[in-house]
Image (cartoon, rainbow, N blue to C red):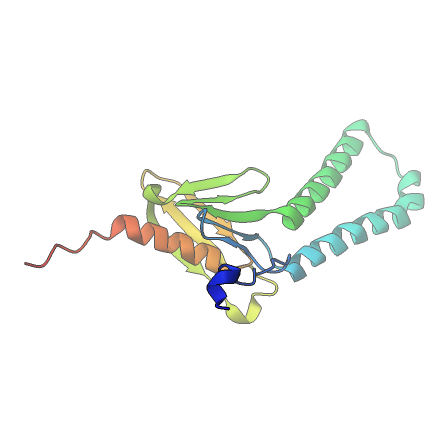
Length: 173
């Protein structure tokens, strides 16, 4: 019997794991964590250490003379530390067609047609600690930094910008 009698052969599907960026090229979506795993782990450790130090210091802090405004400031500072630590851990960079989005304290979003200038900052030797980042200057003012643990997301956005800014070659006669 021929292979056609059994139907077309299925190709093995690639499995995604959490460490690799999501590559859904059919939908034009590429996604990765905004910060490298080591930096995210370091953020968690630092937040836990700060709160452990606060608990350890609690007996001496109770003896201090605290005003209501000082307690409010300390509470707000604690919330800010936890809030920024949360976003370092859960922030994602995502390229959706020609729009680059990064979830952060506030979501950053830029379309390839709004871009006037790009600059990729990437130190390969330090990429476990310092995420590759893309400086985006917009046509009508404004500047935004986008971080991605996988520089391929940022490079793919740069390619989208290049497609929009480079005029097509004239047809040859």
